[in-house]
Image 1: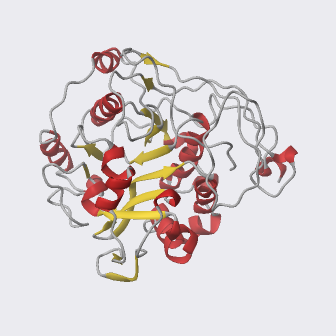
Image 2: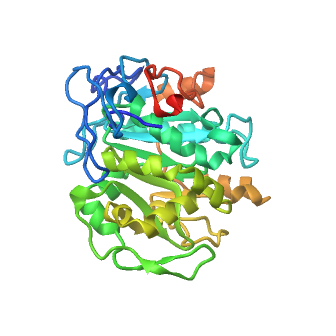
Length: 374
């Protein structure tokens, strides 16, 4: 599944406009056959071009013409940090199955929408909520793998964004005041939270036999994920727009991985790539666990969330009968904040953009792809 000119979310509205707006359509890509080690520059201007990402001739390229984006975009009166990217350059991605309930928690999706859209509004970020069931990979494989085509499409839908930030639905942002840029994306935040030359744990705990790199080059970092407890968890991570990220997503959904990794499917796929491909480690920074992936106190997967920590992840909560009580307990402990009126209105009148993004809907037509050719 190839995708053109990657970029993180944008389409900032007026600085003082609190209303919801639809992101501008896009009509450009870049033409190149660069290696995965090369950074893809942000889209510039409105020139319509083509991009060739494989070794195949131009007729196999995906032509990205103007297309409507059926995702939520909120203009915010608050801008991102002056040393960070412009408002709208970071895209938050949520996905869920399209079913009525999840984890047995009443109104879970509405709560998550309130939490993330308020955060996006406050810091000037974009948010996209996909119906992950519509992204089914071939042969009815486990839904876990569907996050990869969701991410591939997110980069297409938002050609101006610089970072795409995936969060599983079972995560609460506990510290709304802390921007993700200041927390882990800025040079200072990354240096503060990165773990270097440290043993990576394996599932179940204990040393895996391999370590995080002893250093990193900030300009070459394309992937940020927490490490600790049971190793790395792909429930919460960030990817930078680059040819490397495009290549990684293509590799991550390798059919042999899908067939081989069945215990912790896409998580084991990521771990395999990190362990066996130096180019993956070169462009990845692992943070301490609580920076992106603290757990509730009952959870034995790793370090527990502490007051002031950024977020909390209820991984595996669905198998716990007390899950709703645990969720509600921590929901009450999160930083208090004022929910913007527009978000309240959307939740009240049923127009909240929850699972509104469907695979392929609103995307530019694919002129010819390798998959079609085969």
